[in-house]
Image 1 (cartoon, rainbow, N blue to C red):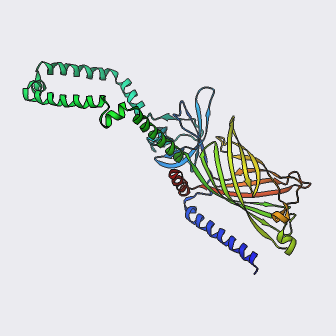
Image 2: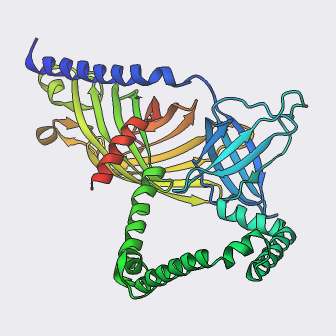
Length: 421
């Protein structure tokens, strides 16, 4: 066996081991053959809820927010993408709650009492908002205004009695020894207050030292800026393969997709170009030995997402299959009827055209362009169908499949790297 063949076998064996480790760790946690269920809920306000925020049933993660739409009647329509069907009963609740004091929201679903009537699957669902701590306090004050006023009036009456020496508390207050103690305590408090007013001590510096106050404020802002991206960032691991009929080649990709927010993501990985000597692409081994050959090329892209009505357009410039290129994706959103999401893609890159320098010649005069549809089969699998070499004399059929999933372990690694910076 020659050195090139040994290298190819070694690389394929290494890739196989890596994939086996990844799949063995995660496959038991993935319901890869289950299709998502979709539920439509109407709210009057969503308190900062974002697309992609989690949905929890009785505290258990069960899905995410698939889309948010403001209706002409001022209601807000939210579609929930669920991992499994959820049975709701007459006293169900669907609430928007705060994830933590650091921010973030989630949709909480309380199914209700099983002994009551079930909610039909086609019934319009209504949601509510759980107020934050400060809002709850304000609402409590508003709802109990009369009781609070009565309480304050009673307090004033008690203070008046104390000042006249009436009652047990009044007698204690008018006791000389207690008075002297209170006077000494008052004097101490005055001294502390004076120190604070003069800007002395920690509290004085915090309150009156503008520089220190600014530094503390900036430190808090910096901490929020660090923690907010950590909470929002999503990391996906993916493996895909595509077959091109006329070229008789397979292009496979292994990649990591990092999405710091819903309007941008980075894709970093490698493309494995497995070229067949009987196809139309020329390469080093085909010309010299009439043998197949494997090439490994970088795949690095940055994607910018632009919303338009209920659709999303993504522009992806970068390095595709080892060459400069770009792609445009038109995503058609999920509907409440559960129709599978569909993405139409047009992408192009510089073609390989020099066997001497690049060891590959795709026999194209200009760039290589392709158009294809991506069909969402499940939470983890996508199907590719389309055409390659669009402006060639004879375009070829292309088809393939993609597997990807969110990986919290890898997200933690990138989180530590970001915090270290």
